[in-house]
Length: 294
Image (cartoon, rainbow, N blue to C red; front, side, top):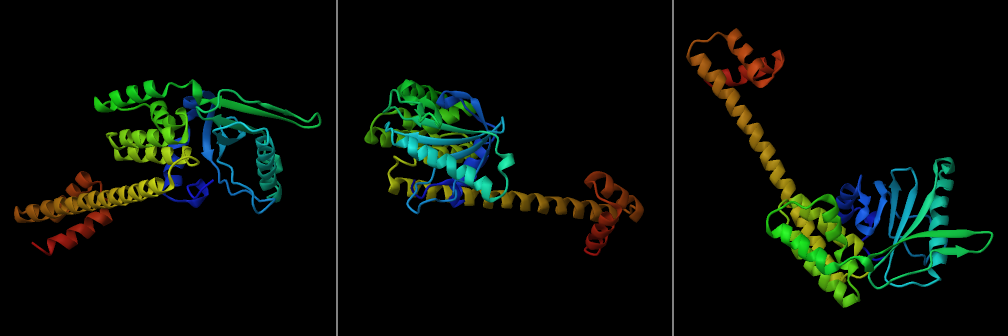
């Protein structure tokens, strides 16, 4: 795996963590797998040159699912999967939490480059069962046209359709074809009506295409997402500040107008408590503050 991984706690990871919670993997053809949480993938290493696993999810049935993405089949991958499973078990063991480990599922999602693969590694004393999903069965052109049509008509995508857009590049064969599909998917994501939805889909595209995306393109996309997030935070902060300033202006106007018309202090305090849901002490503080200006 490259630098775009969950454990980096960067913008991609944070957005994806919120995006995938409570979602199923129906878009991959695995509707029975529902994600409850995303777990860190920085597992205890047995050898210094070991690869990080792609995703580690807590499922709704309490099982852990190790998710790996492959664009080819190699029987040696079974060794890698056994290594992943051993490291997940080791994480629980070193924490003294083995009793909390219910089941571990090894799930492999194959890109459109793979039509079939072995799913059982039988050593008699040890049997590894892999649950596979094959994206070669997904019609990438149909998915693109359908999602593009909805977006152009200003229609909201469903959660499953947003997931389809995230994994669209994996339904295309070849590295060049995948990069072209990534850029087309990013183009659609940028036209989604809500900034939050845009960020979710862009984070998904970055995450699911981590092994095949052009790294410079990915770097620029992450920087764009970071700027969008910062801009949204500043906007939210400005809106909140505006609300607070507007509320204070309302309090000032009520107090000063009522004083000018001869309304008693007790009546003004009562109005403040009712109209602005203030406590008696808060009403007193605002009255003292703004009555001195009149």
